[in-house]
Length: 115
Image (cartoon, rainbow, N blue to C red):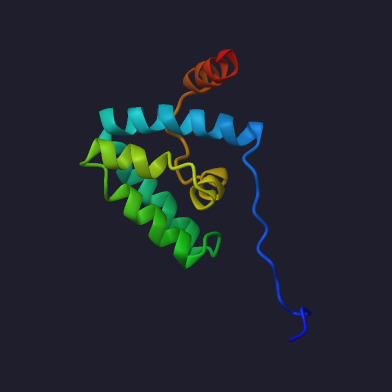
């Protein structure tokens, strides 16, 4: 069988930017757990992106499953902060927008570069 037409999936390695994004998500996770009312805004962002065709169905379902875990803090953290390639890609185009203030964002990034 010819190798033509067979598309190989590329495996991307986490970058420094991915580490910064992960650090931001750690801080966002804690803020969401402390202020779970913010989940409604995140769900609205998810719906808007899905309806606009900016997110695939599989990503939409994945984000939904994570948001549904908010009542179980350990599970929510584990799923949101998963180090796998799939979650790394999803975090790059996160639906967790508007959660952190600029000051919180800067502090999180400074903490990431200090460690």
